[in-house]
Image (cartoon, rainbow, N blue to C red):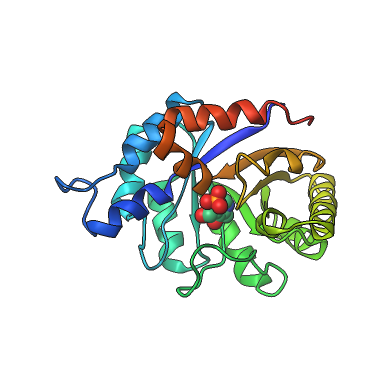
Length: 248
Ligand code: PXP
């Protein structure tokens, strides 16, 4: 199976919100996450990921509904484990939903979800979305205890947090890689689909290749940044080309 690319377009909305905290159909609301999604599709994206945060700092609800309606790609909604976000997901009906931890102070999603610690709440949230036909992923640190807890919730997928791996250097880099290998192996053995993401870029991507069983990578910041030089379609195409070297 080829490794799939989910393109996270949140940061297109971040740029728009920096000047215009308005709805996506406001005349001066630019850049457009919808156009970015279309360009990502043209570049070979396999899915689009967006995160509607509780504080609406980038994607707005209206972005999610517009992208859902207009772009013929599977949509992966990242969301916090809250009633508000679960209600949004049930209205939006994306193909995939990924539960992430969320705190207002963080700059981006900074750690994995503590599935073990909040087991009953997460299990219930997973079931509510699955009852509506949405496949559920849990964004977790590459920690075997968290992988086991994720499997117990009956989530179809895990997304392994690659942030520490991406930031590590030298010997730490080997340690982080080992954690990802163990977590991916355990997730696969528990019959979950194994995705990964956070902090991946054109430079560090292939260092991830020793990690087995990866199905999809979710990548945002580096692609949106590269798009400023070469455009979104080319930036996505470059990432997809790099991903063809994944040994599987
Ligand atoms: N996966 C999850 C769960 C995330 O929260 C994010 C960041 O929004 C990403 C992947 C993408 O991370 P990055 O923007 O660093 O590529």
